Image (cartoon, rainbow, N blue to C red; front, side, top):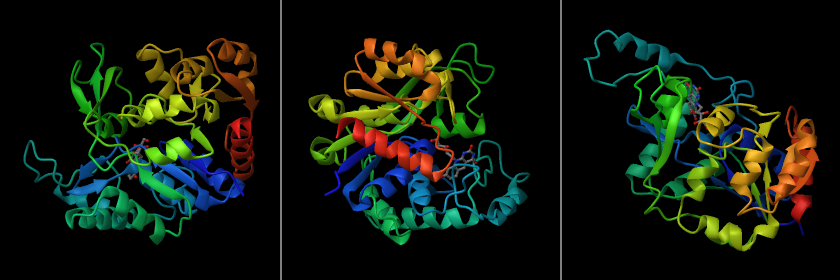
Length: 324
Ligand code: FO1
C-alpha cells in the first residue's frame, strides 16, 4: 500500500507539489493541511486564497500563469465594481477593486460564506468545495478559528512606516514591496489545530515549498504542531522554497533577510532543523549541501523547480523516498 502523507501547505508552490504527489501516491491517502492566515473578507465574502489555490490546482483548473484563481476566468463583476469608485465615501472600502476576484472564483466565495453563515465549520465547507471540484486528496484548513497574519512595516517603509497591515493589503495592494519589520499571527494562540492526528500518524510528513515565515509559520504557531513534528522528526522532510537565494514566487527571500534569516537553503535549514530531519534542495544549490548538513539536516539534491507536471511528480517521489 502507498504511504500515507501529511503535507503542510501554503499557496502555489505547495499546490504544484501536491499535484505531483497526487500522481506519485494514492491521493486518498494524502492530507494537505493548509495555511489560512492569508484569509480575508472582501465585499462581505470570506476568501481563503491558499485553500482555493490548492483546490483549483488539484482539480486541474488553476490559472498556471498567475498561480492563483481559475483558468479561463472573466472579470465582469470586478469591472462593474469600478463604477462605484467615484461615489464611495471617504473611509469606505465598499466595492474596492485592488483584490481581483474573478467571476467564477466568486462562486466559491459565495458558497463558502453562505455555508459559514449557516454555522458550518471552515473544515466542513472546505471539504464540500473539494468534493465539488472532484479532488481526491484531503484538504484541511490549519484551524477552524480565524487566524490572521499582520505585518508591521519597517521604519524605512515608504508606505505607512511602523504601521500594522493585513497580509493581503501588504501582499496584493502594495505588491509586497514595503519592507516588513515584524510578522504576527493574530488569533493563533487560542486556535485549535486541525489534522494533528494526521501529523502524528501519517507515514511521512512533508513541509511543502512554501514561504517558511508566512505560509508554514502560521501552521507552526498553532499549539502542539511543532511538538508533534519534533516528536517524529526522522520522517519529516521539507522542500526548500528558496532556490539560488531567491523565491520562485513571492517575497520569501526578502522577508527572510529582513526578519533575520539567511535567504538561502541554509537559512531554511536553520528554520526547520528542530522539526524536520531532511531538506530537499535544488541542484543549483548543491554546493550548499554541507552547510545544510552542518545546520543539522540531511540534504537531498534534485530538481525542485516544478516547470511541468513530470518534474513535480519526480520531486514528490524523491521527497517521499528521502524519509519513507
Ligand atoms: N494575488 C495578487 O497578486 N493579486 C490579486 O488580485 C489576487 C487575487 C486573488 C483572488 C483569489 C485568490 O484565491 C487569490 C488571489 N491572489 C491574488 C493570490 C493570493 O492573495 C496570494 O498569492 C496568497 O495569499 C499568497 O499565498
